[in-house]
Amino acid sequence: MTSPILTAVAWPYANGPRHIGHVSGFGVPSDVFSRYMRMAGNDVLMVSGTDEHGTAIQVQAEKEGLTPQQTADKYHRVIAEDLAGLGCCYDLYTRTTTLNHRAVVQELFRTLHANGYVVAQRQQGAISPSTGRTLPDRYIEGTCPICGFDGARGDQCDNCGRQLDPIDLINPRSRINGETPQFIETEHFFLDLPALAGALGKWLETRTDWRPNVLKFSENLLAELRPRAITRDLDWGVPIPLEGWEDAPMKRIYVWFDAVIGYLSASIEWAKRSGDPEAWRRWWQNDDARSYYFMGKDNITFHSVIWPGILLGANGQGDRGGEPSAFGRLDLPTEIVSSEFLTMSGSKLASSRGHVIYVRDFLRDFGPDALRYFIAVNGPENQDTDFTWEEFVRRINFELANEWGNLVNRSISMAHKNVGAIPAAGELTADDEALLQAARDAYPVVGDAWGRCKFKLATTEAMRVVGLANKYLSDQQPWKLKDDPARRDTVLHVALQVVQDCNTLLTPLLPHAAQEVFEALGGEGVWAAQPELVEVTEPGAEASYPVLRGDYVNQQAVWASRPIAVGTPLAKPTPIFTKLDPKLAETGPEWAPIG
Ligand SMILES: [Zn+2]
Image 1 (cartoon, rainbow, N blue to C red):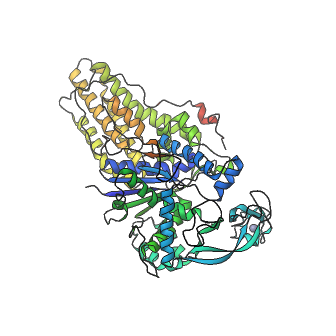
Image 2 (cartoon, rainbow, N blue to C red):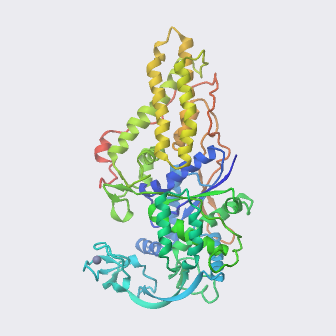
Image 3 (spheres, rainbow, N blue to C red):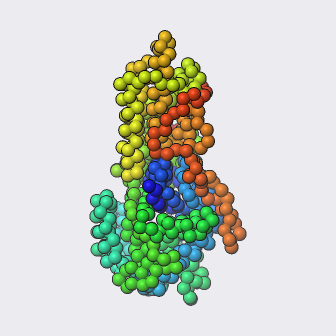
């Protein structure tokens, strides 16, 4: 039975290239999950894009002597290329500076306003006197009024841990250019979260299968919900779609509000590009559809409370009632899949601190599947995890190359050399049957684990079968069966069948290698589909932009044991995984900091 599954992946921010910590949190897990779900016959829609608005883009643009749009263009392309290189199978990876996104954001904003969930309020806000733009809290620093620490930020003091308001700081200054911020009273729109808290609470009560810590965390937030400003004094962002505001040069919708709406706008853009503009409704207005949101743990609030709040308000389902938006009633998230942080020598892999391994460098030297494998077996699934080159080399050399690569290589090599094709099996022994059965039995176990985002468990189970197959070859010693070719061929047949099965089990995780193994077994055509980077245009816009999309429906990989075809010619295989230089374990590559 196929069911519609929306994979909604966190939107990377366009202020620089992404590092491996980012993609270990949202990119790889969402792709492994989606690839499995597609193989299992579900109708997956996987969407995301680059988050391109907000102050940090403007700051980066000024640093580089570019306009914000040029900076967004530059990093959107870099990020899209990196995600393509990793093999992330988006149905659409787009961006937030499209006209489509703007229109969808404005429609939800207008509806929330009409329904009474977005209200204007005056507040004291900090602006930069030289630009007139809002200075976000974290761009202001000064002396902490509580402990006297001189590097306190406008939102909190890292020394004493207290929450602060920028106006509390002694001797406040802008972290962008050092000037003293000006505090002015300004009018902004607020999302009235308290008016949505009741509906949010009722909905959270239905989320009984969420991880207890995510659920508890979200329920605790409800008690202290306050209205949140969703506009800023800024000239880079989506204009406010209300009379008297639309043309205001320094008022824009704040970046976090527009970015979460990207899940919906990207689905709508995908539908338009698919030729059926209404097709997105199958994932958003359907009791049979499920939606899975992937993110790092620092983003849970936005997905478990604020985005559902926006949806409830736009559906007219909060305390003040109201009418649904022009899109009609929209479904709330089914599941929040958050990961912990990948750290390096204990520091969060933040671009600002220098402990950075960029995806681009990593892919160039080690390829996508080595990183994907490492993230699955050693990534931050349940706790913050330290990346070390030592562990990376160990995992790749002793597991991927020695275990899986070696099984593929020696079984296909022997069959090629002795038979030239996939040999037929004679009568099976108990050992043969046991191995074949172990491979078949792994499908429900490994599949269930991929589908529940238990990546470590799924990989361990699949690699356990690889280990059994290696042991089988060592025990049966087909290379010593020159005088008994029938038995030798049976052993090789069984080994190749298990290679085929293990390749299927590992396809969601190692799609590039899986295609190679499929071809080494004599397969033709696409086994595991890859995304394509294509240039698209939009009605009404001049510039084209790159997106990721792909045809994942016509790939041959399905979640079932596929009998190998006796007689298929086999060529001499080339090694799928090469071992890394052990020296790398001590020093890392030249381009990477050790910590
Ligand atoms: Zn302090």
